[in-house]
Length: 93
Image 1 (tube, one colour):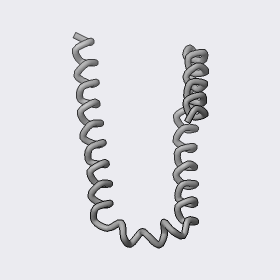
Image 2: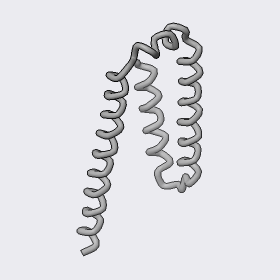
Image 3: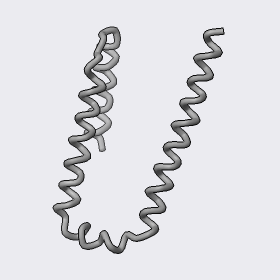
Image 4: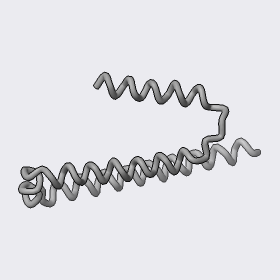
């Protein structure tokens, strides 16, 4: 856990040092790395026989939790988007 916090703090420090530069490619790099991490997570899950055997027992409860998480994230994102947009409109007036 300490490694994760240290890596995150290092990223924040580097971001702060580079804040004045235009890093237009950074979004594409981030998206690519997220896709790689998701792929590797899938490989890890697919390679674990215990998880694969237990997929059938996950059932409706896991689907409900996943759907609730997606729906909650989407609703919160919509709320934040509308709030940010209304804040920008108020700043223009």
